[in-house]
Amino acid sequence: MKTTRPDRNLHQSDQGADKGTEGERDEMNKRLSVSGKAADFRTGLKVAIDGPAGAGKSTVAQIVANRLGYLYIDTGAMYRAATWLALQKGISLNDGDAIARAVSEAKIRLAPGDEGSGNRVRVFVDGQEVTKEIRTREVTELVSPLSTLSAVRRVLVARQKELAREGRVVLDGRDIGTVVLPEAQIKIFLTATPEVRARRRVKDLSQLGQQADYETVLKEINERDERDSNRSDSPLRPADDAVMIITDNMTIDEVADAIARLCKQD
Ligand code: DC
Image 1 (cartoon, rainbow, N blue to C red):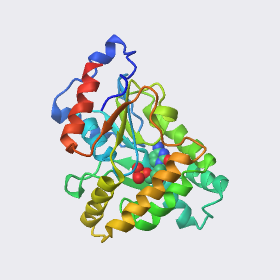
Image 2 (tube, protein in one colour; image 1 turned 135 degrees about the horizontal axis):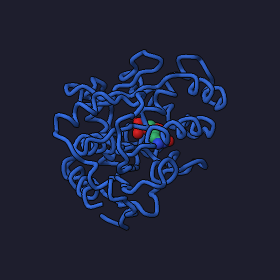
Image 3 (cartoon, protein in one colour; image 1 turned 180 degrees about the horizontal axis):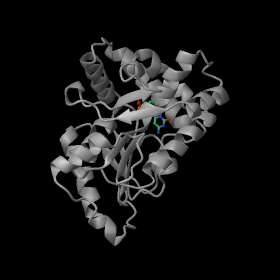
């Protein structure tokens, strides 16, 4: 399960950063929507979780962030919001510069999800909630080609770096350990076989009230993996110093425990 150990270049002050009661941490996570300035963050760990769709990244990242009292940033949701915005504005999905301009002018805000809603991050674009809209089949199909556009990636990566600047963050995505936070002390690459990921996706979609056929979802996952892994800008791949976790036979809690242990050891 493990390839290499993550870098260990923590400062003394990081060790004491994980303080406070559960209640205080929850409160802090609630207060700190991603768009807010993380004014009361002390320097702390940066945790990068990468991997293909359906490996369980976002669920695990959210649990790890809650346990550590860190801010969780779902970077896939930012690419999805950019896709929704382009569709909304009628911008051609091939026009990277126009989409990048629209994204840089827009306010994309992520906020902690409600307990009852599967705890998905809530997403707002210029004040309008698009949490559900960014998870539709249409956006899911279009986000992968959109994420190949370098101009769009530049804008979003710069925002992600800024949001993570103070540390005490968990980011999940495809290029976090390699491009967004190459300096992250903890890098995880979560993966699972396409068949297991397709079964999980079908279950997730049905919980969102969307019917999906397993074979179709599997085909889409394989296509998305192919595109995400072979694009020229920031392809999906494990950082050299990432810990690889294959989640086929692991529960979400087991994966979260393994990552939280790595964070505490550092
Ligand atoms: O994690 P997700 O399925 O919500 O991500 C949606 C798409 O965004 C995915 O096809 C790849 C892309 N993405 C990316 O290119 N880089 C990231 N850091 C996060 C997501």
